[in-house]
Amino acid sequence: HSLAVNKGSRFHFSHQFAELLVGQLEDILDKKEVSYIIRKCDDGAQFRDMSANDYIYRSLDLDDFCFYHQAMYYTKRYKKEGHKEGHHNTNDDDDEKIIGNEKILFREGHLGKDFAYLTLMPRLKIPVTSIPEGKLCRIEELDINNENPSDVTREKRETYAKMALLMFCPFRDLDGNDLKHDGSYWQKFDAFRKKHYGEGKTEMKRFEIPPKTLDVKTIRDEQYLSIGDDDDDERVPGDNGGASDGDEKEAQGGVAFWIKGFEILQNVEDRLSVEKCQGRAPDVLSDEAPNLCLDDDAAKNTKEESDDSS
Image 1 (cartoon, rainbow, N blue to C red):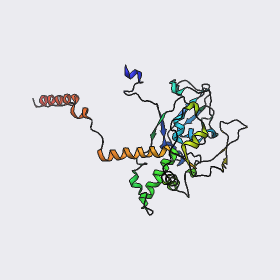
Image 2: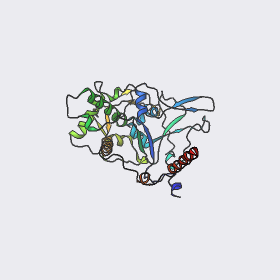
Image 3: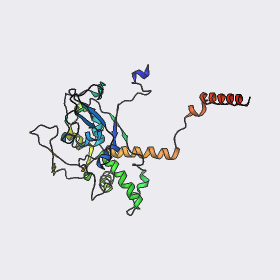
Image 4: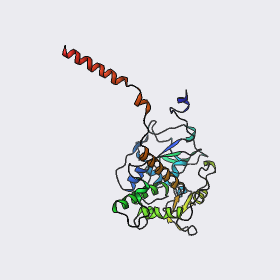
Protein backbone atom coordinates (compact mmCIF):
# COMPACT_ATOMS: atom_id res chain seq x y z
CA HIS A 1 0.00 0.00 0.00
CA SER A 2 2.96 2.34 0.54
CA LEU A 3 3.67 2.40 -3.21
CA ALA A 4 0.19 3.76 -3.86
CA VAL A 5 0.56 6.43 -1.17
CA ASN A 6 3.96 7.49 -2.55
CA LYS A 7 2.70 7.53 -6.16
CA GLY A 8 4.63 4.44 -7.17
CA SER A 9 7.87 5.35 -5.40
CA ARG A 10 9.55 3.29 -2.68
CA PHE A 11 10.54 6.50 -0.91
CA HIS A 12 8.71 9.50 0.51
CA PHE A 13 10.32 12.90 -0.10
CA SER A 14 9.61 16.23 1.58
CA HIS A 15 9.41 17.95 -1.83
CA GLN A 16 8.52 17.00 -5.37
CA PHE A 17 11.05 17.38 -8.18
CA ALA A 18 11.30 19.43 -11.36
CA GLU A 19 13.45 18.69 -14.41
CA LEU A 20 16.17 21.24 -15.20
CA LEU A 21 17.48 20.64 -18.73
CA VAL A 22 20.77 22.56 -18.60
CA GLY A 23 22.09 20.77 -21.67
CA GLN A 24 19.06 21.88 -23.70
CA LEU A 25 19.53 25.49 -22.62
CA GLU A 26 23.20 25.34 -23.65
CA ASP A 27 22.31 23.85 -27.05
CA ILE A 28 19.84 26.67 -27.74
CA LEU A 29 22.48 29.27 -26.95
CA ASP A 30 25.02 27.41 -29.13
CA LYS A 31 22.51 27.21 -32.02
CA LYS A 32 22.53 23.41 -32.00
CA GLU A 33 19.74 20.95 -32.78
CA VAL A 34 17.43 20.53 -29.79
CA SER A 35 14.88 17.83 -29.00
CA TYR A 36 11.36 19.09 -28.46
CA ILE A 37 7.71 18.06 -28.13
CA ILE A 38 5.13 19.02 -30.76
CA ARG A 39 1.98 20.43 -29.19
CA LYS A 40 -1.13 20.37 -31.40
CA CYS A 41 -4.29 22.47 -31.22
CA ASP A 42 -7.85 21.88 -32.38
CA ASP A 43 -7.55 24.50 -35.11
CA GLY A 44 -4.55 22.73 -36.63
CA ALA A 45 -1.93 25.04 -35.14
CA GLN A 46 1.10 23.46 -33.54
CA PHE A 47 4.28 24.61 -31.83
CA ARG A 48 7.61 23.20 -30.68
CA ASP A 49 7.60 22.98 -26.89
CA MET A 50 11.03 23.30 -25.21
CA SER A 51 11.40 23.91 -21.49
CA ALA A 52 14.56 26.00 -21.98
CA ASN A 53 12.50 28.53 -23.94
CA ASP A 54 10.31 28.99 -20.88
CA TYR A 55 13.30 30.61 -19.22
CA ILE A 56 14.74 32.54 -22.14
CA TYR A 57 11.37 34.12 -22.98
CA ARG A 58 10.10 34.50 -19.41
CA SER A 59 8.17 37.59 -18.41
CA LEU A 60 10.14 40.58 -17.20
CA ASP A 61 8.38 40.06 -13.89
CA LEU A 62 10.79 37.11 -13.46
CA ASP A 63 13.82 38.99 -14.71
CA ASP A 64 15.76 38.51 -11.46
CA PHE A 65 15.32 34.73 -11.34
CA CYS A 66 18.01 32.34 -12.53
CA PHE A 67 17.14 29.17 -14.47
CA TYR A 68 17.42 26.96 -11.38
CA HIS A 69 15.41 29.32 -9.20
CA GLN A 70 12.56 29.71 -11.70
CA ALA A 71 12.18 25.92 -11.91
CA MET A 72 11.76 25.81 -8.13
CA TYR A 73 8.78 28.16 -7.98
CA TYR A 74 7.05 28.19 -11.36
CA THR A 75 5.51 25.54 -13.58
CA LYS A 76 4.17 25.70 -17.11
CA ARG A 77 0.53 25.07 -17.81
CA TYR A 78 -1.41 25.02 -21.05
CA LYS A 79 -4.54 26.94 -21.90
CA LYS A 80 -7.55 24.62 -21.98
CA GLU A 81 -8.98 26.15 -25.11
CA GLY A 82 -7.32 25.12 -28.33
CA HIS A 83 -5.53 21.95 -27.23
CA LYS A 84 -6.55 18.44 -28.14
CA GLU A 85 -6.90 16.07 -25.24
CA GLY A 86 -3.81 13.91 -24.91
CA HIS A 87 -1.41 16.42 -26.48
CA HIS A 88 -0.51 18.18 -23.25
CA ASN A 89 0.04 17.34 -19.60
CA THR A 90 -3.00 17.55 -17.35
CA ASN A 91 -1.27 17.00 -14.04
CA ASP A 92 -3.85 17.38 -11.30
CA ASP A 93 -1.42 17.06 -8.38
CA ASP A 94 -1.97 19.55 -5.57
CA ASP A 95 1.44 21.06 -6.29
CA GLU A 96 0.32 22.01 -9.81
CA LYS A 97 -2.69 24.12 -8.85
CA ILE A 98 -2.68 27.82 -9.59
CA ILE A 99 -2.16 30.37 -6.82
CA GLY A 100 -4.51 33.32 -7.15
CA ASN A 101 -5.26 32.44 -10.81
CA GLU A 102 -2.24 34.51 -11.87
CA LYS A 103 -1.04 33.64 -15.36
CA ILE A 104 2.45 34.88 -16.21
CA LEU A 105 2.67 35.20 -19.98
CA PHE A 106 5.73 34.52 -22.07
CA ARG A 107 7.42 37.24 -24.12
CA GLU A 108 7.47 37.55 -27.89
CA GLY A 109 9.65 34.87 -29.41
CA HIS A 110 8.29 31.99 -27.34
CA LEU A 111 6.75 29.52 -29.80
CA GLY A 112 3.96 28.65 -27.37
CA LYS A 113 3.19 32.20 -26.22
CA ASP A 114 -0.45 31.93 -27.33
CA PHE A 115 -0.97 28.46 -25.88
CA ALA A 116 0.89 28.28 -22.55
CA TYR A 117 1.87 30.33 -19.52
CA LEU A 118 3.72 30.07 -16.20
CA THR A 119 2.08 29.97 -12.81
CA LEU A 120 3.37 30.03 -9.24
CA MET A 121 3.22 26.68 -7.41
CA PRO A 122 1.86 26.44 -3.85
CA ARG A 123 5.04 24.66 -2.78
CA LEU A 124 8.48 24.84 -4.31
CA LYS A 125 10.06 21.85 -6.07
CA ILE A 126 13.67 20.68 -6.06
CA PRO A 127 15.22 20.81 -9.56
CA VAL A 128 16.91 17.66 -10.86
CA THR A 129 19.67 18.92 -13.13
CA SER A 130 20.39 17.27 -16.46
CA ILE A 131 23.97 18.28 -17.38
CA PRO A 132 25.94 16.69 -20.24
CA GLU A 133 28.58 14.29 -18.94
CA GLY A 134 31.95 15.89 -18.28
CA LYS A 135 30.69 19.47 -18.28
CA LEU A 136 31.21 19.89 -14.52
CA CYS A 137 34.69 18.61 -13.71
CA ARG A 138 36.37 18.32 -10.31
CA ILE A 139 37.34 21.66 -8.79
CA GLU A 140 40.94 20.51 -8.48
CA GLU A 141 41.08 20.22 -12.28
CA LEU A 142 40.36 23.98 -12.58
CA ASP A 143 43.72 24.80 -10.94
CA ILE A 144 42.17 27.99 -9.59
CA ASN A 145 45.31 29.46 -8.03
CA ASN A 146 47.36 29.12 -11.21
CA GLU A 147 47.51 32.43 -13.11
CA ASN A 148 49.02 30.76 -16.18
CA PRO A 149 47.00 27.57 -16.70
CA SER A 150 47.41 25.23 -19.65
CA ASP A 151 45.08 25.34 -22.64
CA VAL A 152 43.33 22.19 -21.38
CA THR A 153 42.72 23.79 -17.99
CA ARG A 154 41.45 26.99 -19.61
CA GLU A 155 38.94 24.96 -21.60
CA LYS A 156 37.77 23.14 -18.44
CA ARG A 157 37.39 26.48 -16.67
CA GLU A 158 35.27 27.91 -19.47
CA THR A 159 33.03 24.84 -19.59
CA TYR A 160 32.60 24.69 -15.81
CA ALA A 161 31.83 28.40 -15.57
CA LYS A 162 29.35 28.20 -18.44
CA MET A 163 27.34 25.46 -16.71
CA ALA A 164 27.37 27.34 -13.39
CA LEU A 165 26.26 30.61 -14.97
CA LEU A 166 23.52 28.95 -17.02
CA MET A 167 22.01 27.56 -13.82
CA PHE A 168 22.56 30.36 -11.31
CA CYS A 169 23.01 33.67 -13.15
CA PRO A 170 19.91 35.47 -14.53
CA PHE A 171 20.37 36.25 -18.24
CA ARG A 172 18.47 36.90 -21.45
CA ASP A 173 20.88 37.35 -24.34
CA LEU A 174 20.56 34.41 -26.76
CA ASP A 175 24.23 34.73 -27.71
CA GLY A 176 25.24 34.29 -24.07
CA ASN A 177 26.93 37.70 -23.89
CA ASP A 178 25.20 38.37 -20.56
CA LEU A 179 27.22 35.49 -19.13
CA LYS A 180 30.63 36.63 -20.38
CA HIS A 181 33.22 39.24 -19.48
CA ASP A 182 35.65 40.07 -22.27
CA GLY A 183 34.37 37.00 -24.10
CA SER A 184 35.06 34.65 -21.18
CA TYR A 185 32.59 32.70 -19.04
CA TRP A 186 35.33 32.03 -16.50
CA GLN A 187 36.13 35.71 -15.92
CA LYS A 188 32.46 36.38 -15.18
CA PHE A 189 32.09 33.38 -12.85
CA ASP A 190 35.43 34.06 -11.15
CA ALA A 191 34.31 37.61 -10.33
CA PHE A 192 31.28 36.21 -8.48
CA ARG A 193 33.41 33.53 -6.82
CA LYS A 194 36.00 36.00 -5.53
CA LYS A 195 33.34 38.33 -4.17
CA HIS A 196 31.55 35.45 -2.43
CA TYR A 197 34.61 33.86 -0.83
CA GLY A 198 37.13 36.71 -0.85
CA GLU A 199 35.22 39.22 1.25
CA GLY A 200 34.01 36.66 3.74
CA LYS A 201 31.52 34.03 2.68
CA THR A 202 28.22 35.69 1.76
CA GLU A 203 25.37 34.20 3.75
CA MET A 204 21.91 33.91 2.29
CA LYS A 205 19.25 34.98 4.77
CA ARG A 206 16.58 32.52 3.65
CA PHE A 207 16.58 29.68 1.15
CA GLU A 208 13.00 28.47 1.10
CA ILE A 209 10.57 31.38 0.86
CA PRO A 210 6.93 30.21 0.89
CA PRO A 211 5.46 30.91 -2.57
CA LYS A 212 2.49 32.77 -1.08
CA THR A 213 4.87 35.36 0.40
CA LEU A 214 7.26 35.38 -2.56
CA ASP A 215 8.40 38.87 -3.51
CA VAL A 216 10.78 39.51 -6.41
CA LYS A 217 12.61 42.30 -4.59
CA THR A 218 13.07 40.06 -1.54
CA ILE A 219 14.54 37.38 -3.77
CA ARG A 220 16.98 39.81 -5.39
CA ASP A 221 18.09 41.51 -2.19
CA GLU A 222 18.35 38.45 0.05
CA GLN A 223 19.43 35.63 -2.25
CA TYR A 224 21.56 37.09 -5.04
CA LEU A 225 25.14 38.31 -5.09
CA SER A 226 25.58 41.34 -7.34
CA ILE A 227 28.65 42.64 -9.14
CA GLY A 228 26.77 45.52 -10.73
CA ASP A 229 25.88 48.97 -9.41
CA ASP A 230 22.65 48.50 -7.49
CA ASP A 231 22.08 52.24 -7.31
CA ASP A 232 22.22 52.67 -11.06
CA ASP A 233 19.37 50.49 -12.28
CA GLU A 234 19.84 51.15 -15.98
CA ARG A 235 18.37 48.38 -18.07
CA VAL A 236 18.23 47.58 -21.73
CA PRO A 237 14.74 48.37 -23.10
CA GLY A 238 12.64 45.28 -23.69
CA ASP A 239 9.13 43.94 -24.11
CA ASN A 240 7.00 44.08 -20.99
CA GLY A 241 6.06 40.38 -21.16
CA GLY A 242 3.22 39.57 -18.80
CA ALA A 243 3.17 43.03 -17.22
CA SER A 244 0.34 45.43 -17.84
CA ASP A 245 0.57 47.94 -20.70
CA GLY A 246 1.22 50.81 -18.32
CA ASP A 247 3.91 48.96 -16.39
CA GLU A 248 6.77 49.26 -18.89
CA LYS A 249 9.89 47.45 -17.74
CA GLU A 250 13.39 46.90 -18.98
CA ALA A 251 15.71 43.89 -18.88
CA GLN A 252 19.30 43.11 -18.06
CA GLY A 253 21.31 40.04 -17.20
CA GLY A 254 24.65 38.76 -16.01
CA VAL A 255 25.04 41.07 -13.00
CA ALA A 256 23.86 38.70 -10.24
CA PHE A 257 24.52 35.16 -9.06
CA TRP A 258 22.29 33.06 -6.81
CA ILE A 259 24.24 32.54 -3.57
CA LYS A 260 22.79 29.06 -3.02
CA GLY A 261 24.45 28.07 -6.29
CA PHE A 262 27.88 27.96 -4.65
CA GLU A 263 26.61 25.42 -2.12
CA ILE A 264 25.02 23.32 -4.88
CA LEU A 265 28.27 23.32 -6.85
CA GLN A 266 30.13 22.22 -3.71
CA ASN A 267 27.63 19.39 -3.25
CA VAL A 268 28.36 18.24 -6.80
CA GLU A 269 32.09 18.38 -6.03
CA ASP A 270 31.61 16.32 -2.84
CA ARG A 271 29.66 13.68 -4.74
CA LEU A 272 32.29 13.43 -7.48
CA SER A 273 35.00 13.19 -4.84
CA VAL A 274 33.27 10.31 -3.04
CA GLU A 275 32.66 8.45 -6.30
CA LYS A 276 36.32 8.80 -7.26
CA CYS A 277 37.67 7.63 -3.89
CA GLN A 278 35.21 4.86 -3.07
CA GLY A 279 33.55 3.95 -6.32
CA ARG A 280 30.00 2.75 -6.52
CA ALA A 281 28.70 0.81 -3.53
CA PRO A 282 28.36 -2.91 -4.28
CA ASP A 283 24.89 -4.32 -4.79
CA VAL A 284 24.87 -7.05 -2.13
CA LEU A 285 21.64 -8.57 -3.40
CA SER A 286 22.86 -9.11 -6.97
CA ASP A 287 26.34 -10.16 -5.80
CA GLU A 288 25.19 -12.84 -3.37
CA ALA A 289 21.78 -14.00 -4.55
CA PRO A 290 21.80 -16.87 -7.10
CA ASN A 291 20.65 -16.01 -10.61
CA LEU A 292 18.03 -18.67 -11.26
CA CYS A 293 17.71 -17.69 -14.91
CA LEU A 294 21.40 -18.41 -15.52
CA ASP A 295 21.03 -21.76 -13.76
CA ASP A 296 18.08 -22.66 -15.99
CA ASP A 297 20.03 -21.68 -19.13
CA ALA A 298 23.01 -23.77 -18.01
CA ALA A 299 20.79 -26.80 -17.39
CA LYS A 300 19.11 -26.34 -20.75
CA ASN A 301 22.45 -26.13 -22.59
CA THR A 302 23.70 -29.25 -20.78
CA LYS A 303 20.59 -31.18 -21.78
CA GLU A 304 20.92 -30.11 -25.43
CA GLU A 305 24.57 -31.18 -25.52
CA SER A 306 23.63 -34.52 -24.00
CA ASP A 307 20.91 -35.05 -26.64
CA ASP A 308 23.35 -34.18 -29.46
CA SER A 309 25.99 -36.63 -28.22
CA SER A 310 23.48 -39.44 -27.96
